Image (tube, rainbow over all chains, first blue to last red; front, side, top):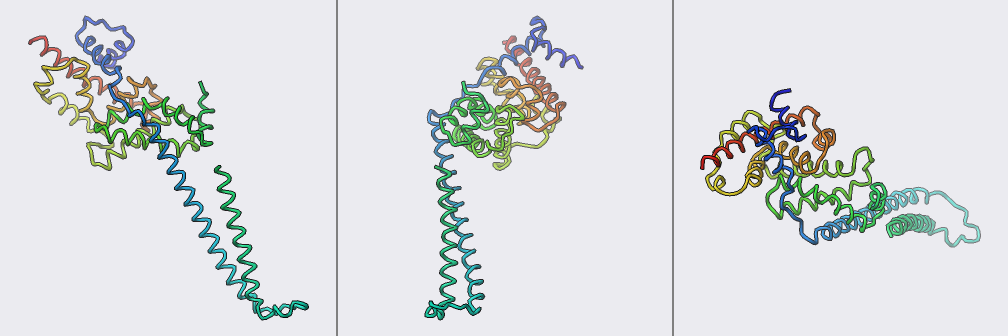
Length: 131
Length: 187
């Protein structure tokens, strides 16, 4: 350890003689460094941060909702395509035979209803989770 | 007094009163760190706000492996460094030791500064001229009373580097103040 390093340590511990010019200077430097600077934050600082935090949180939530909705729509489209493909299959409607010309429409309606239910449940759940 | 773990879990669960308390407890630390590196009042205030916003967002990732204050100081330091980089202010990853020493020691102190002010103020003016890493080490060690391992964690630097920055920064200040005091005695 060098002379200067030793001196800094001694000054920190209060063991160096203030008569020594270097030690005296270090004492003054350390005194100045230990004093808190005169800086202040505005009185409504915390309030501003909280407002920003809440705004960020809200934005993130609406973004999450948007993605769930987009995912729901995508699923609907996929299911609708599948439904149309399956609609070509002959189904025996027996007593409800008058519905047979609309079977494709019925399949799409049921799939849409299920899809909306899933999306709504997801959205509803995420909203109640944050309340 | 709320225990640190409880405070953190309350903030994570969205308790804004707890978050306000957390800010109150650490605003001095953040202000000192940012304040030493950014002079403009408005910019400083906004940076401090951003630091606490980041703390709020990232608190769920805090693992209690370090003290909360060390973790917050790390965020503040990175934030300040990013700000300096973004605004192309005097910042280099590693301070150019030779240039710093030459510029610092040979630089003439303006007369108005010499005539003025007491030593405390003079030291603060000198600190402003030091590289970012030196200023940060001085702030964390002297003002916040952090230990070497804590400073290493905040600045992501090895123990030897932190110790050497602290030693050199104090040595440079001492040399300059010694000259200043010598001139004062002559007057």
